[in-house]
Image (cartoon, rainbow, N blue to C red; front, side):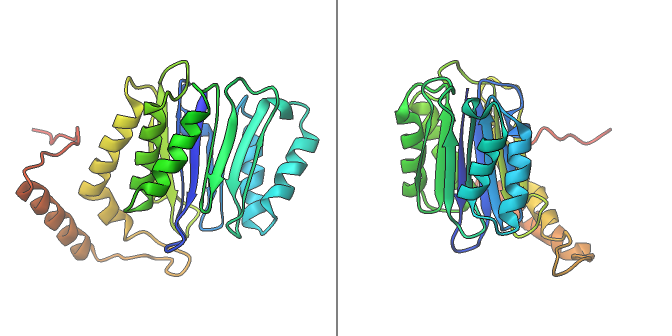
Length: 249
């Protein structure tokens, strides 16, 4: 049904989650992140309260293993649930219920957890983990590369429909929250949206308020300059805009 990656960048503290599924809008209900403190993916026969509660408790400093144990103990449907997370201390915890549809399971390495259910086989999560560890560059790009490797290894055994990529810096609002809710090639669509975000959005996002600077940057000149420079560089590389945005008139 779904596979996802939860990842932490040790250099920046950024946390991200990417998901793909033969299910509508998986990016809306699987990932839960609380700033630079917790990242949780809740999936399978999903209970959204698992993701919400786990993110809040882990962000407050509760160990991920204890949080998951509490969720399992309270939920009569726990054997149908799957969850994996990276808590505030960077520790990984996961649960795959015995009634999750085969193939279902999870793997991890320092800074990365991968889990899935209703997959073509264990090679899917292994491919995601291994590709992430082998990749370089920004966290979001490493996660996209990893998810594409999982798809190449068989992905969701039913097919494809949706994907999502959410990344947080230190704030509770996302730096990226990209979704392809119903698409013939959802991971490729996430790639396109990521490219579009780099045309204008990320330069605007640099101006947004933070805990340390509530007002953010209110001088538009640096943002406009960065957008112009990015556009000039894209044109110099011979790359057309991948945005569907059009001017009126």
